[in-house]
Image (tube, protein in one colour):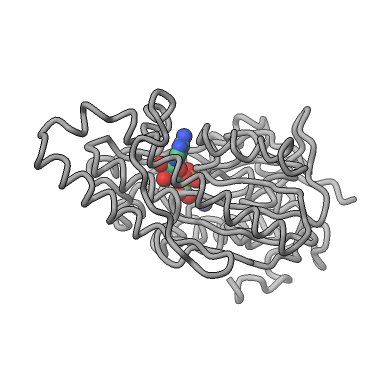
Length: 338
Ligand code: KG4
Ligand code: ZN
């Protein structure tokens, strides 16, 4: 094993994040969110890039300070090369490349989706890491995927959304109910107090292991319109039941596909990640799979499920082990590919 300190940078969407890792341990993981998007009810790419520009220097400085590490002690710099919003990615990418050139350190490019999955390998007291093979489900405001993971870098996407991400389904439904952005946590909160079977919404019929959420959104839109015409305070009067019913439908859509994925692959280990894995109903439903269907489930610390640089750093660490030239930025030539 090659002992190393890695600085990791993530800027693919609306969070600017920097982390310092010593091998697979996270020493610091600083995240600056962007409240500016709340008033628009979604992430505005141009505003996101500008906020990254403001945050990147203080966030990296804070990560180094909190880890109590001088930049001269670093062995490599890892950064998110994609997928994500281009303007946002450019800020982290350019910063990482310049810093690597300046410090003459190897630069490691990281795929954001792989990072969400490999976040399960961050060394945390009391957290058991999954063993291969396992199924990873990444659910967030931007992603909805089921991935078969056979090894650290041997992954196959076996199902994904054909339209909206799960988080969007939560957020767009919440918006129709007049809740603030991002609405997922609000739906979760009110759902706990309501009857999940009060309003039956239909599940989409999507082939294979793929997902679709845009139909649910349209259904809810007409449902709200129709009922509000008949009774103007309908949403307020029934908020808990509506949220519970929406959440119940989303959980069922996810569980159906997971059960199908387990059946098709014969793999019963399931690791979830992404901001939506914070949802208490989804957590419970997946956990219940252990007793019901013999699943083994993995849910990392919340800090590592949402967008964060800690997960970029763990991929950096894993890739660092196989780097040919660990000494310099220039000898590596990685800048050409990313
Ligand atoms: O991973 P994340 O922070 O950012 C990306 O989208 O990549 O995920 C944010 C998403 C939002 O859609 C938010 O509404 C959703 O995660 N979310 C939740 C909950 N907490 C966050 N959705 C449902 N229930 C929650 N408790
Ligand atoms: Zn993400």
